[in-house]
Length: 430
Ligand SMILES: *Cc1c(COP(=O)(O)O)cnc(C)c1O
Image 1 (tube, rainbow, N blue to C red):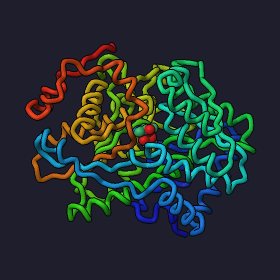
Image 2 (cartoon, helix red, strand yellow; image 1 turned 90 degrees about the vertical axis):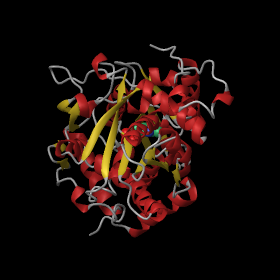
Image 3 (tube, rainbow, N blue to C red; image 1 turned 45 degrees about the horizontal axis):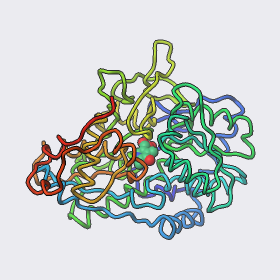
Image 4 (tube, protein in one colour; image 1 turned 60 degrees about the vertical axis):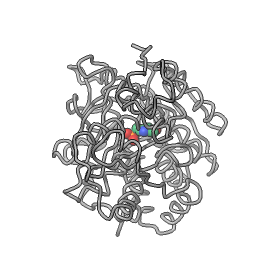
């Protein structure tokens, strides 16, 4: 039988029967949880071949989320940078402001079909929590969201959104009080009642079948963008760029291009304050194989295999591992993984806002920043497609407070170069 959700993507990118993408992935969980994972896998297998389910999800995408999201040619940015053309896949325009609603609707539909009463999840920047709380409100399920205390403070508006939507937000006080700790706590809660609850993971991570399932739900991004680029430019993009935290928005857009050997794929990891400072979350660039949250990944870890604290200005990228398919694509060299620092991301955040009237999420700003670098190196005949995974409303206060613009007069805009403009961004934060 055919998987109808990812019918248009590369069929060779299915994991093996135990959920391995090469040597990564699988399922490393306690026995009782394995039984539940097997049930989820079986149910997903069933629904992914069920035209009614696929139609129900497609209806929600169109009439609830507002899909297809457009592709925008960033003409002003392209001109300012000088070089290859930059196109943006506008996941920032989705209901709830990011790509996460794509898989949350799928996961909550699945939960309903499994007869679950409650969905639980972790959240970093709060985007996954808001998207899941939204889907749960729509479909009448209870929702518990685990969130690191640091992120609770940093992302206050999203905390309010989740509460208004009827979710319970549980602040996590362990470890670095960020994303990894939130996942740990959500897993613990799941183990307490795997019958009535289901853990809706927020990215292409965790035990099988989640990396495959979330990827399939996100593949709508790539399928749409592929057709849109063909229609707008008459050909496939030359380069596709996406930021990688756990890696769901990147897998969503990459999955439609894996078979197109001429399309170069770039995954952008958070370089934080610089790779040499240790304050980053560039797991594929700096990590080693290891096990985290029930799956084999490439992990930033200490000598004993314990995950080390990681850091990024973008809460949604602040994770010590990456999805198993990314690890495989990294090892076989199909995707090139690179890094962008906090500072470079903030520069792209301002540049896209000023030049295109689009305020990007700090996560997505990493992809924009790398596309700018790439465009400068490439000639004007190339087309770069950037996955603009989300909007930056959640980040505006944080950026204004820590990276204010100084001595910048709007009338300089026409005369100052990209570089000149960026020199007006002050850095209060260290
Ligand atoms: C959560 C989030 C990310 C990171 O998650 P991935 O699974 O790596 O896509 C990126 N961008 C935005 C806007 C997010 O909310």
